[in-house]
Length: 145
Image 1: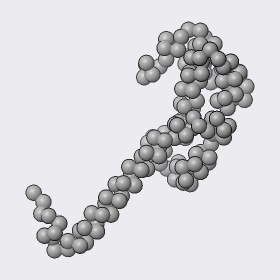
Image 2 (image 1 turned 180 degrees about the horizontal axis):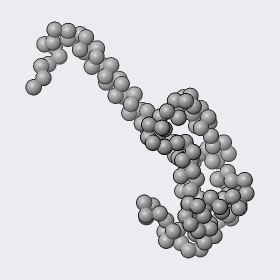
Image 3 (image 1 turned 90 degrees about the vertical axis):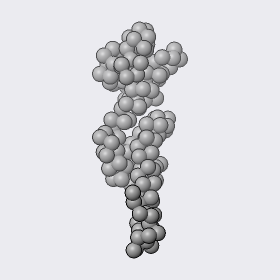
Image 4 (image 1 turned 90 degrees about the horizontal axis):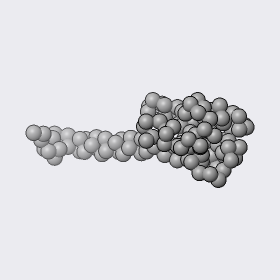
C-alpha cells in the first residue's frame, strides 16, 4: 500500500507533481477528442466547399502541424478521414431518391460526375447507379452492416 502524500518528506512537491499529472491527463483527453471531431467537421466543410486540413485546423483553433501530428498518432491522415466521410455521405445521398448523381458529385466536391463514379467504384466495386438500384445494404462493407 502506498503512503499518503501528506506523510512524504516533500509533500508539497508531490502535490505539485500530482496536479501537473492531472492537467496532462486532461490535455490528453481533449487531444483525443479533437481527432474524434474531424469526421463531423469534414462533413460540415463539404457544405462550404472548403475541405482542407488548413480549414479544419483553423476551425479547431490549432496549427496545421498540430492537427497533422494528432491525426498521425491515430495511424491515419486527414485525407483518409475526409475520403471515408465522403464515401459515407455518398452512400447516404444515394440511398435517397432526391439528388441526382451529378448533384451528389457536386456536393462532395468532385470536379465532375465521372470522377465521382470512378471514386465510388473504387470504394464499393459498383457504380453509383448500380448501388442506388441494388439497395445500399447489399453493397455495404461488412463493418457498415
